[in-house]
Amino acid sequence: MVDTHCHIDMYDDPLKVARECEEKGIITIGMTSLPSHFEVGYQHLLTFKKVRLALGMHPLFAEEHSKEFQMFCENLWRTSYVGEIGLDFSVEGLPTKEIQLDSFKKILAILAPQKKIISLHSRRAEKAVLEELIRYNIENAIFHWYTGPGSLVEQILNHGCFFSINTAMIASKNGQAIIKRIPLNRILTETDGPFIKKNGRPVKPDDVSLVESYLSKIHGLSHPSVSKQIKDNFLGMIKDISHS
Image 1 (cartoon, rainbow, N blue to C red):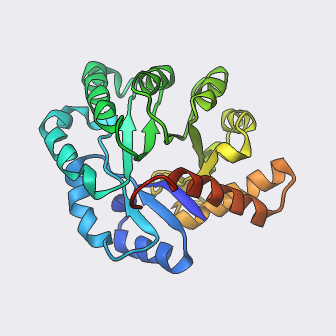
Image 2: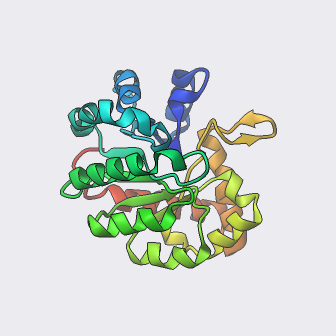
């Protein structure tokens, strides 16, 4: 199983979650919201083989971006994964729209010549995020928990991007409609744990099996074959990454 977007550092016991992933063989990419968060967690995961930490600059933390930007640059060499980054033009994020745009463009300019896997936040800003990816010719990008217009999905696919699917998406009509537009070879799985709840508890990386089951049902394929396809999709993304 593969969880491409999980906020391990936000669980009550992050190391317990990481150890569970290691024991179960679940490839897990831990998102961070700021470079300072990455620095705190990085040392704790150095000995893990299945768990990696991504370097993030979350759009909803935009007011912290300017003072942490140098830290982002200094830590970029430590990981092949960048996330969570992006734009948020919802009511919550709109007040810092210009800061977000400035920060996002600076980050993409740095990432453009490098080979990194990027997990993107794009709430109410899907078109703007895609436009910047195209502008900076960014590949190996994943639209995490996409909730935007279905009409934009094809354009995102045409640019070579992937979509990561979680349990909230398979439980909503909008999410299901979006999933139907995405070919299986461009889908990855995620939990966005612990922010999504399942049966009253925060989801954990092994809950990606629920997404795999849903995909196997709608595609008429066996669960193992879907699980293999998802893993192959991920391995295909990292094949050109120098260190993972």
